[in-house]
Amino acid sequence: MTRSKIACRFILCLMLLPSSVFAAVILQYHHIGDTTPYVTSIKTDQFIQHMTWLKRHHFEVISLPELIQRHKKQQLSDTDKVAVITFDDAGISVCRTAWPILQEYAYPFTVFVSTELVEQNAPNLCRWHHFQTMFKSGLLTVGNHGHQHLHMLDVNAYPDQKHWRKAVIQEIRQAQTVIDRAMGPQPRLFAYPYGEYNQSLKDIVAQLGYSALGQQSGAIGNGSDVTALPRFPLSGKYADPNTLADKLNSLPFPIDLAKTSPHPLKIQSKHNPPELTLVLNKQLDSTVQCFLGNGEAIPTKQFNHKITVRYTKRLPTGRARYNCTATSPYVGRFYWHSYQWLVVEPTSLRER
Image 1 (cartoon, rainbow, N blue to C red):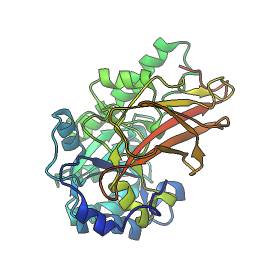
Image 2 (image 1 turned 180 degrees about the horizontal axis):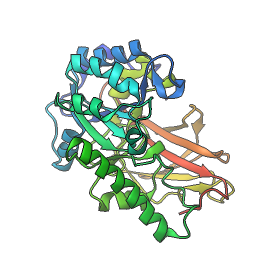
Image 3 (image 1 turned 45 degrees about the horizontal axis):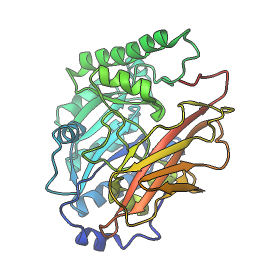
C-alpha cells in the first residue's frame, strides 16, 4: 500500500525529521533478477537503487541480531533512520547478484534458509560454500526458515494439537541443527514460512528461544512483538523504488492488539470476515484508515481508544492483510500497522 500521493517530498521530509523518533524497518527480499517469478523478485537495477537510496539518505543499515539486541535493551537510537536487510529462501541470485552489491556497500544482511533443499544441492539455491564465503566477510547472518518450508499452520496431517506441536518443534530444530553444523552457531532467528503464524506457533517459537519475523508490513519500535516482527516485502509491484521512502519513513503504530478473530479462519466461519481490534496507547490527532492489501478501504469504528476493523465481505481462501495507517506529528511520516490473515477451506486446516 502506498501513501506517496499525500506524503511530502522525501528529501525535504528527511531534513525535517526530529531526532527523537525511534523506528527501524526490516526489508524483505527473495530473488534478484529479471527471469525469476515476478511476485517474489526485484530487478537488479531496482535493488541497486534501493541500496543507493539507503546510502544517499544516510540510513544506518544494521544486522538483524543488532536490531534484536537494541529491542531487548529498549535502546533508543541516536538516529531514527535504521534499516535491516533480509532475504528468504536462499535463491541463487542472493549469492550471485545481491552479494557483490551488498559487499560493495558493506551492508550486513540475513538470509533465512530452508535447509532441506540446500542439503540436496538444489540448482536454484545457494550452496553452503557460498554462505561460508559470505559469512567470512562479517556481513552475513544465516537464519532459520524451517527445514522443509512447510505451511506451519496446516494441522490436517496430525491427529491433534500435541502431534502438531511436536512436528513444528522438530521442523525448527532440524533446520537449526543443519545451519549450525554448516556455519557454526548462529543467532536464534526464525522467519515464518509464507509469513503464516498464530498465537500457538508464536508461543512455540518463544519457548525455543527465537526472535521471529513475519511478512506483514510495518515499522518496529521498542514495544514491537519480538516473536512477530514486521517486514516490508519488496518484490513484484512492491519493488518500485519510488515507494521505498514511504516504507522507510514509516513509524510503529502506538497500539496494542486486543482479542481478534480465531486464526487461521475457515472460509465459512462466522468469524469471516475477521475483526481486528486496535487499542491506542496514545492519543492520535488523525484518523485511522485501514485497507486490504489491494488498497480497498475497510470500514473502521472507534470508541474512545479502541478501534475495530472489519471488512464487509468474506475474505477468500489464502492470505490477506489488513493495513492501517495514520498521520503522525512528524512531518512526512505515517504510523503503519499490518496484520496478515490466513483463510482456509474446511478440509485443509482447522481453526486453532
